[in-house]
Image (cartoon, rainbow, N blue to C red; front, side):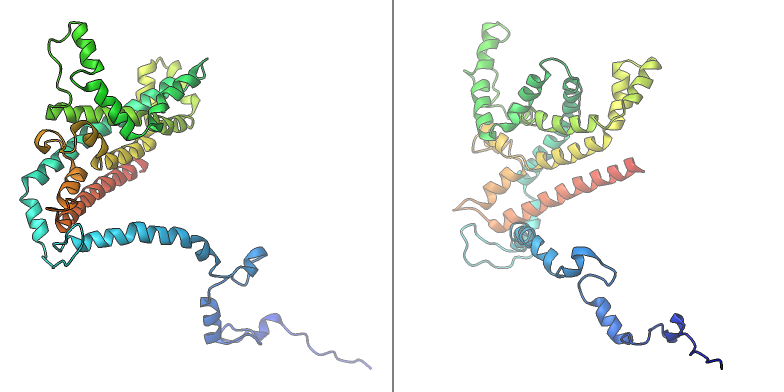
Length: 339
């Protein structure tokens, strides 16, 4: 007698019309479980035992640091720009847009803005090109080349204050430069490097370039290692000289690094303070003619007697907008270059 066995269960038969298998929680419970933080059902290894809050725990110090030293000061500065707060604290009243209106009509503000923009316009192209040329010179593996690389990088390690004092000694009326030029009968009287407003600004730019060449040379040395040697060899076979290979092979190969260097240098040029202070004195040159925006912010916001922290905050916001515009411009150029 033949015994009929019960029909086998089809795995797909247990799936309901809503897509839920028998024995599994319904729609609402599945939704809650899907939204719950933590590893997914198909996760494996250590992820099955990791708490959902553990990554946030590791990031907490960085988040707290950025919030305390970045986000909060920025928001506080923005808030103070609408008040007449004093540098030593005390009661502050809301003044609306008065600080910004005062800023637009302040001739000293526009002079400081001119100096900052002029500083960036002159320093940025030179800082983009000169370290690249320097990196090309020291890239080759020649005997003793490590000494020159170290020598070019040494100014980066020195303090800005120490470098400024050294340049004071070199450029003063009785300094080494004027003394040598007079003994060589190239000049009759000392050149006023540290008393003429334009010369102070140019000397400060030279100090920035001298101190930053070695730093950005490292950037370019890393970028030059990614330029294929085959391109240089092919260009040399076609008869291209060293100068043509530099402009048509090296420069396109490190263009992204050039944009990065230009962005960093531009931001640093708009924020320059130490060079002007060390060469032009606490007044920022004769009559304050060489003050940049950070220098001007210090003068108008931090003076214990006449300072106005609210107005200084408004100037700080203007400096932020100027820096942001430069950064967005560099980002757009980077996207166009990538396209």
